[in-house]
Image (cartoon, rainbow, N blue to C red; front, side, top):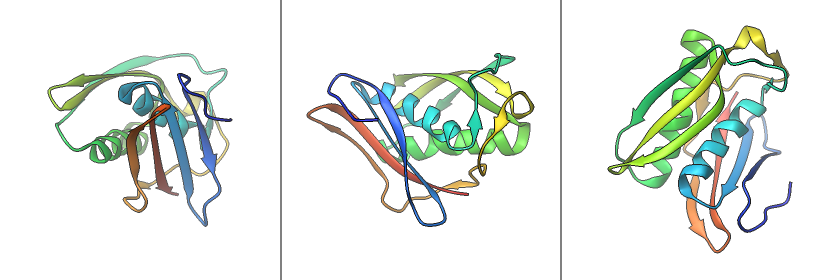
Length: 142
């Protein structure tokens, strides 16, 4: 997928033995939500999944890249501990942190198409505003 100003999207980028994702959107919060979708897309086909729950949580105040890591770490944690994954993500700014709401389903309700990420790498981490909006990139350990 090609990045266009004012549009949101994501893609997986080839990376040795891991998975690298890139996401972009007009706002920081939309970009972060797109990164969650990109993470899930690396290992699951959710096209036929039905929502079975919802979850909300707060990410404490942090610098931009640390917000990205904390958000994606929460996805990995919940996958590992409860077997739930987000189908839709809404992110709003909250006093330097984030408020996140997910519509969720269980991993048993989706087709697993790849290795489930085990951690978010801090190597070559990126979240910044640019002329086209916001973009982020992160490597996932699988």
